Image 1 (cartoon, rainbow, N blue to C red):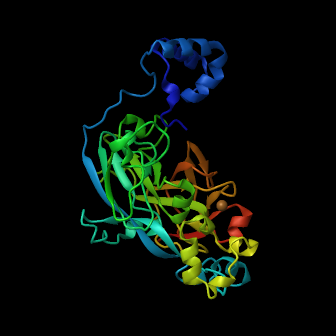
Image 2: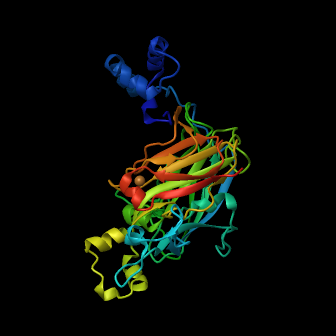
Length: 409
Ligand SMILES: [Cu+2]
């Protein structure tokens, strides 16, 4: 995959050398990364020399920014009691929950069940943060994810953020260009004063994050018309992301976007976030024990079965087919943005029944997904029906990492 890469720090001389080599290599295309790997032996020295001379990058077009629109999003971190299975039914089997599912979803004397207090990014209509953005069927499937932030290369994104939770919160974006005053992450980076205000927004506080969307935040030469990045909480990254502070940011190639920033050559966009959400690792664990277990004093947080019961094998925060809104029609150009965060158990294999797609130029009906992955799969569904979309990892199937999507007649 040729997203833009730091490897482009090579010079014009190298460009010529690489182009000479490229012409001798099998067509059609080879990414710069591959090319450098293939040719490292012979041109590595040239690369270093050219970079030291500070020459032009050879692949990325000149960085352009600020020429487009400023897209303003009002996003709050809200405390939400989130239900991983609102229908209380295994929608994949059509049966009530049994022994297997109840490991994760049943509430009890010392079990939290399927509802947890979480911190979620929620979109509002304006800076008063009084009116949540009206529900939109297109985005119903996002579930616990924050709103999609859309932008076109050349735009500026402005997120007016309010922290409605009891803990400090932030937004850290991937891919877009930000200075130290809009990174949303506290660490020992030598900054101080105003450059620290973005790091952690206090409970009840507000902050405006400004990120630009240069060429290198958009699709590379081998990408489609849009690419996906994540944004997420990054004060205590593990706690924040398990608490639910995760969303997707989509950047469309310059000239390929609708007025809302979405790619004009795509009819339906879906975001899929597969993660074994570790409810043991959120700052709400104690709150959840006190609120949702029958006899809080009997809970032992180091009990293996209790720990297991709080590992929610979710897609967008839903288990066992409870994810709503994956609706499409035959012939539509459907783009799936597939992302993940987590730990070493988060080895996922998102798989679609009944259809195939294009992923990084290859035809497939499943892809590999690891913590931190950001993938795009394009599909034109043909066969109508209600179809499984699930993780192919055995453990995760049993634990409920499954959804249904519908290709209407
Ligand atoms: Cu999985």
